[in-house]
Image 1 (tube, helix red, strand yellow):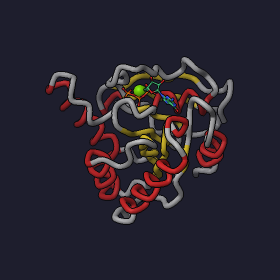
Image 2 (cartoon, helix red, strand yellow):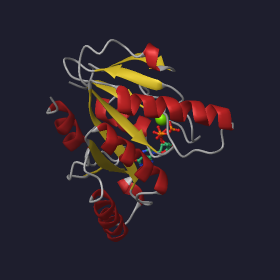
Image 3 (cartoon, rainbow, N blue to C red):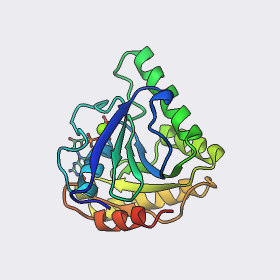
Image 4 (cartoon, protein in one colour):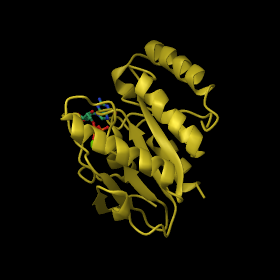
Length: 195
Ligand code: GTP
Ligand code: MG
């Protein structure tokens, strides 16, 4: 499904630009800078495939990647980033919401949560949106390499408590580090098993 077989397809700025819904897809959602693009690079084994950056708000389009015989991987613009001009932020938020609630072939949303910070109010908003759209979502903790095991476990408990309020939440969490590779094989297997 992945290594060597993944390619950038297109960047989308409006719903009518989405590619034909001719296969399933999974998307990566999360606050700005949480590590969505880095995770796609780690999953595919291609470092420069999705543009990752220290500047929050780097991904400004819905970016589609193809896998061989598998689902589209969809890299979303981050939410909760207030530095960009308000009209720009509002445009992304509208597109994000339209996409998350209106894409028939979206089988799972991976909601990325920073292993140091846990679930924030903006994450709760996205989770509530996914509940109402009946899109199953699964939490992926990112940047596990940046946190001590004890602090990570506290965050895991906070995330589990938050998920208990969300009917669309898939109960299994995945702890990852795109930097060190933790959890990447697990997440690949989860994506390969989605039908
Ligand atoms: P936007 O597109 O702006 O929403 O950000 P994003 O969620 O795509 O984040 P991105 O992948 O660009 O990563 C943001 C920063 O976090 C970059 O400097 C990455 O190198 C860093 N980063 C991402 N994943 C990890 C990780 O697992 N460990 C560490 N240490 N740094 C990471
Ligand atoms: Mg990005």
